[in-house]
Image 1 (cartoon, rainbow, N blue to C red):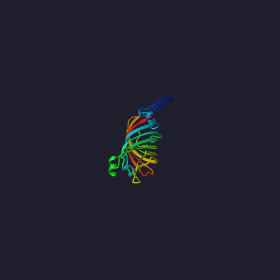
Image 2 (cartoon, helix red, strand yellow):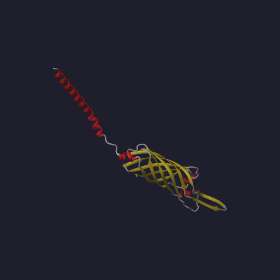
Image 3 (cartoon, rainbow, N blue to C red):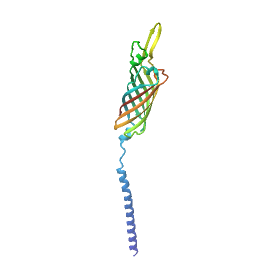
Image 4 (cartoon, rainbow, N blue to C red):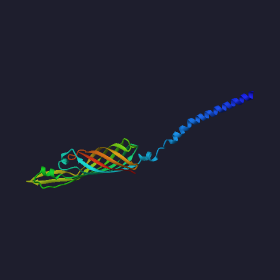
Length: 227
């Protein structure tokens, strides 16, 4: 009788043990399945923000604030090239170069100085700068960003002076010089594939302590290549 009771208890313990094991297995299987179904992070996505990028864009440059330039020079074509390195998913630093060509406005000159022989002289401005960019949604197809630049801008010379009745008359005088320049930018990257995106950008630059060219704005569009 005692042997039968011991056997029954052992059998009951064995059944309870198997029931607990089965319960644990039922609980564990969905968890394991969920872990297997959860997609593993793509290494290309993880490393995307660590890559360098090269941006090439074209548009227009618009002089705005000083009469020395805006009196006789119009907006003109502009281009930009930037090389950036991401330090985290949203923040990047790099170096860039802007170039703009401002065309001479002959009608404005002839209206201001009727009868004076025309000398049309275009102005080219080039800027070399350090750049910072912060992208707000770098993993999304549409990623707006803000940027800032610090560098120097070089203007080409445009001078027209004449001596009239022993008096030196200056019609325009834009000396070639280099000035400290700061800028702010805003835009959006539109990703097509992981390594290629279109970029739209609006930028405003301030040339410090320049009596002729103060604020110039740029509106450009281009492509961004992940290297």
